[in-house]
Amino acid sequence: MDRAAAEAVRGNDPQVYSGEGIFYLKECRPTEKTKTFDRFYHENKDRVFGFLIRLTGDFHLSFDFMQETFTRYFSRYRDRGYHPALLYTIARNTALDSIRKRREETSYRDEVLSGDGDPESQIIQKQGIDKMTHALQQLAPNDRELIALVAARTFSYKEIGKMLDISEANVKIKVHRARLRLREILGKGGE
Image 1 (cartoon, helix red, strand yellow):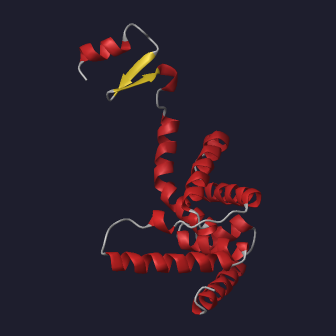
Image 2 (image 1 turned 120 degrees about the vertical axis):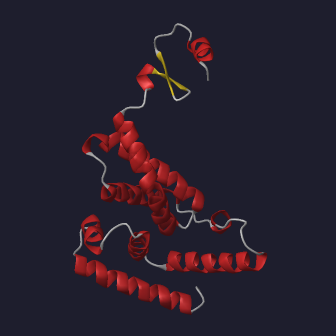
């Protein structure tokens, strides 16, 4: 946008700020804090979403929870720095609170898969995802949460233990047992 066009949009309003062709109200100008949060968001959103999708089994609900998680984090903890463990705790609590209220289950398989590949491989992928989702939903909520945290590959066993207030050794044992139960369920055909 050339200078004349920018002046025409801005007019004589001293409250309007122009940066990189985008106009902001001066009160809404991006600050270093918002830029840092933006970086934190982009670094963690996919992992948090993956964690939530494993926890809930619902694509749209997980997306809503992810947005709610970041909103809560920014509104309550932005002055304390950016800590992924706290973010995951908020995500977990957001999901569990909502699940307790809603108690509804839906599938996310159609949203997860893209149109890439041949139809046969897409069907095989969908069946695999359906089977795994169904098996995860049959696990106890605590086991499902542990599997989701480990699968996110963001935290060590020690960090997961701190989040759940259990020892690292206990996390390893519980994850091992949850994996065994998951294998058993999958071995029975996910029934």
